[in-house]
Image 1: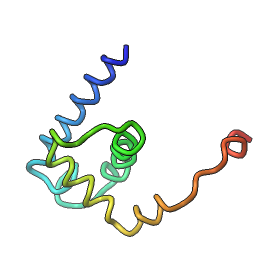
Image 2: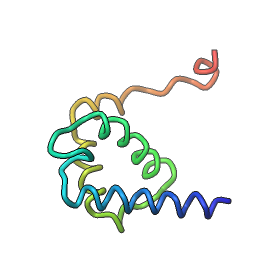
Image 3: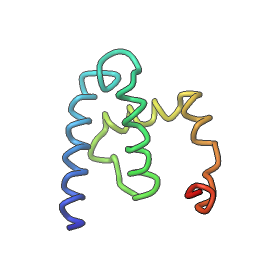
Length: 88
């Protein structure tokens, strides 16, 4: 079962990498909602699951560029709620 998700993650990384090979952002030249919605998923894959972007250089470029945006830096710095508070 885990292998299936690993394969799907690799496929998604390849699709995004291919798209970003020709575009600065997911939907073209401008930062947009697709970037806003996708970056946290890639960030979780890299920082929490330990997945690598080594085989996806254009995705890695995009991920680093979005991660340097001031709003993203501020958002990442917000502390997580304790589990008990989040469930209440």
